Length: 328
Image: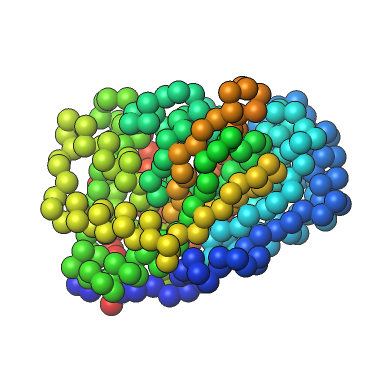
């Protein structure tokens, strides 16, 4: 079996987009006024925010273009100028949900629709990635799209970096075809929800997409911590080798695009075709000035992916679903 390379707009290299603006959207003053008006017209509960209720006559069509780029383009967009400096923390949460509703359906993250990304002093080896200030390996979240609204950046560090999953996949298929097939075999992942068997599940890193293309669900930190599971087998030699290759490629300047998220920036990433990372950061000693991002998970509802990794990662039971790779 030979794993084929994948073509399409999701195959991009950092040099092709670095220093260019077509993946950025700047809100106009009219857009900003619309956001503020919609936030202040919303009900007291963020859970009640909807696309219909969060009216954005001028900005709404722009956000539909953002969605189109996420689904059918490169898979990432940076929106700049959300007026967070004119809103309370609660209003920022409403704004994030309202803007997100115009891009996709909001997906629950456990017991909540929105996560506050800030350092809680948690152990990076056991905590979820949004709870500590350490560096994150390149990974994807278990939803079609992840969105991050920056309320405040860190005092230093905390830069966001992304790579195109398609380009990384194709480099593996081109340079190490013997390892490419391993990406389509089941791998054990860790939810970090405890020490019981429900914290661990198996799924491939890559799965085929309907109509061509692929979806990559990678997260080296969670793959490595899954090794603590009592029933989880140790990595095979081939798995160790392919992880070393993926980690090397995702940290290669040819593939990695770095951006600083500033106050009012909202980053949207298609988890199927973009992996993301973050550098370690140091926070300001004043709690009121510490790094604070709001995270949304969104579903595009376009059915572009086979029943696969995304549903398996959200399931409460482990899965060893076997899916076909992209083959020639």
